[in-house]
Amino acid sequence: MKVLVIGGGAREHALCRSLSLDPEVTSLHCAPGNAGIAEVAELHPVDALDGAAVADLAASLGADFVIVGPEAPLVAGVADAVRERGIDCFGPSREAAALEGSKAFAKDVMASSGVPTARSYVCTTPEEIDVALDAFGAPYVVKDDGLAAGKGVVVTGDLATARAHALACVGAPPRPSGPRGRVVIEEFLDGPEVSLFAVTDGETVVPLQPAQDFKRALDADEGPNTGGMGAYSPLPWADPTLVDEVERTVLQPTVDELRRRGTPFAGLLYAGLAITSRGVRVIEFNARFGDPETQVVLARLRTPLAGLLRAAATGQLAGFPALRWSEGAAVTVVIASYNYPDTPRTGDPITGLAEVAEKDEHVYVLHAGTRAADDGRIVSAGGRVLSVTATGSDLAKARERAYRAVDRIELEGGHHRTDIAAKAAEG
Ligand code: AMP
Ligand code: GLY
Picture 1: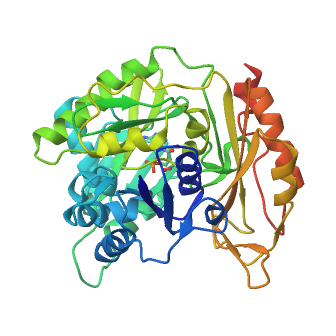
Picture 2: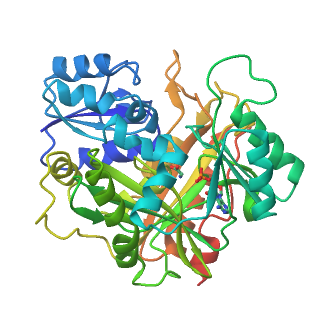
């Protein structure tokens, strides 16, 4: 199978790594990719948001199968453009990807299918915003309706901050032109967060193993929200029935509802969950693999990846053999650039990568924002730069290996959290 992966982050590096280990994959391509992915796949420049350009590339390569990594191309309809060219593609249609692209749409789908989530108001005016903020009280949760690359959500105890973000989302005061934006204001959910991914063909749902992500920039969950600073799997503290329960109460009803609406969701359904004192609630849906959770989930998946994703893309998940998992654990630690998540500095040299690769077969470094400079050195090219991933018989072992490798890697001005999986590993 000739496979083309779209994207260029550590998630796509994790996907490419797993695909490169799958005997069914005879040729692997990635667009645009990054300096790490270049070691396992042939890279091609492409505007990932341009459906026609992606479809042209897939056709010119003679690709049998395209996998779209990030949300923006999905929301832009890139998967549709590839399928229209007669090429199998893993990734939901533009309409189904609205589950991630519009928080208001996701709320509406959950309401129709009885999926448990935070109570919420969708607001377009300052008056509605005030009513909603008053109804729930502090802590306030204010979400931009559209895609905002992890920056659209503000959780704060401060009313003025909450109100200012909500007003900025709807574009008041005063917005020069164009339609008013929408903002979702919802009740605060307490309790630990879990990311659960499911592969689905629009009808059958196959959940993967759960993971936990660390969203804040600094240790002890301090600092601003980020795309994710680290992750681990499995979750030793979670109820063993969690996956079955979420499949029954969240994943299957959501997939059934989208099919009923005539916009079936085929691809990766990512449920961001809060395990609250009143039960499981959906915080958000995403329409693609999560980053950095994918790095740890795929580190443990033993079932070859290409066949699983192709079965989802071609409506053949019913009867797919039960997934196989390693018994062990995986931990990934993100190394981010200076000033991430604000305005990350790029172009800083990275050293120690070769040494890590040689030292320990249980550790590998997945690249996010990296590129090869003209002199061949690897330099940073984005906010999240590397995902240092390790496996082990348990979380403590995997964690120790990951941090030993992190200590060997030097990125000027870079930072990472030191407490990824620390609590879970103790348990
Ligand atoms: P989202 O982009 O919807 O995943 O939100 C980003 C982060 O904000 C989540 O991972 C949570 O940590 C936090 N968050 C979002 N919604 C809520 C909520 N209703 N209650 C508490 N925290 C939330
Ligand atoms: N790790 C959070 C996300 O992928 O959205």
